[in-house]
Length: 266
Image 1: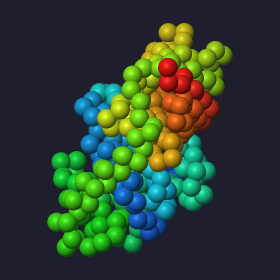
Image 2: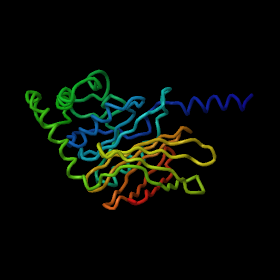
Image 3: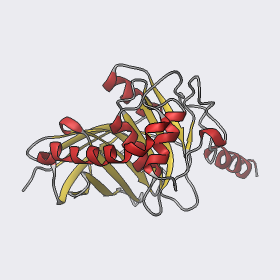
Image 4: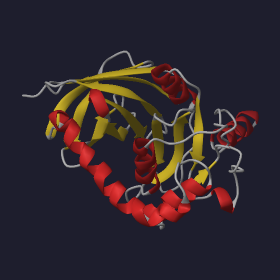
């Protein structure tokens, strides 16, 4: 009986949705155009995916987000490894910028809670830009909101800069995950049109499968994340070379190291 009670209490603790363990951002910050567009993608998650957490550097240049792909909802993971990766890559403080659709990063204008800090996913890009400007996270004035739409279109043209990194099809992937003795083998699929890809990995010992995605950034660098059916997940950074090979590293929700290598172009 005591064992059953203990299991019930443990289940309640594991299902907690508290963000108490992650460092929330604070202070003045202006998002780069890339980070702002990254937030737009985060807000407009694909069908079946829900925005969960958005990490940002205090200089506004580095960003990363987590999705929830389970209909019943997801446990909040340990986002501090992602915050540490951000600080390691930028050399500045990083923290939680948004929880779901609420911007929790506090500055002199944004209280970090309530309706005033919440972004509606049905808003247009221009309306979201105006809200960010109102809350002090973008430069410019609200009166110029009618001219921001052409600027968004021009930013999309920067994809031409990273065309040398585009790839399409499936390749093999070898992944090492602390806790597993053997390498985990699977496939990685690349989306040539949007410079984004999807991951699908079969875990050994009938532990389930992992689905995830990557986002390519300038200089052949990028970020990745996966969510697994055994309620585990991981995220980190990757390096994509001109010959098409990919190496990545990161940490899972329990702060265990994860590394992977994707084969070169055939």
